[in-house]
Image 1 (cartoon, rainbow, N blue to C red):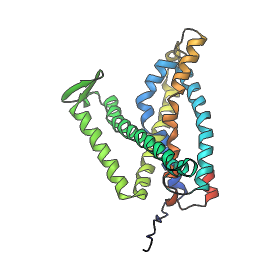
Image 2 (image 1 turned 45 degrees about the vertical axis):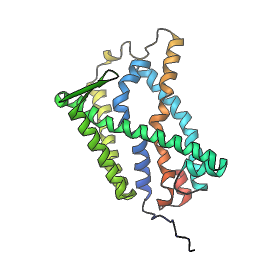
Image 3 (image 1 turned 180 degrees about the vertical axis):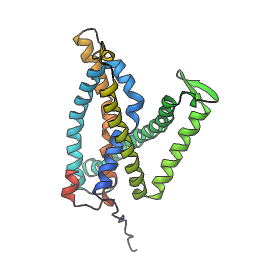
Image 4 (image 1 turned 90 degrees about the vertical axis):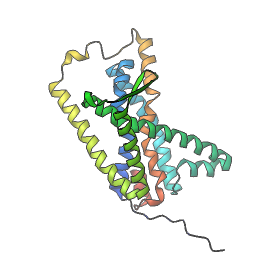
Length: 244
């Protein structure tokens, strides 16, 4: 019986890979969660927490870069663990990743209506129910579901279409980030930082608060794992891919 080819079309260039990974790492999640981080660890404490988390993720990124170029097959960690630990190890790892991705999808779907709520306070219409102290409104739910359907449709269209959308969203996010930093530097009041650099009462509590925020930073920095997921669709040399 003739074996069918499973080769995928190599349609992603260097720019597509960079914006896809960058967009997946940055995302909209920080907009929703930054207030909670500052309340927990303070402004400077949150910065230190993300610096610590970034150092940890850096070494994970080096491992991914090495393994992706050594095994350029779509599937990422599934491929790596199957080669290292066999079918059972890969089965456990892959299902763990699937559940984590489901969590990310749900989180990101909630991010957009939450951001709209911040910008337009009158956006919430049609109270439905309350869960875990959070009021759910019909307008909020419609936007979240519509956004999830849109992203699903784009991914069904193919990785090139997803990369194009990611490019648009990444440019938008980068523009918002830079604008926020510039406007805050120009219009911000230094008095707002009084008592907000660290929240803890002593060094011990500050360290504890910083570590509690650092523990969640990998969730917001780990988007580069999308690169090995589409390794067979990347049209750039492996050595260049490792540098990306």
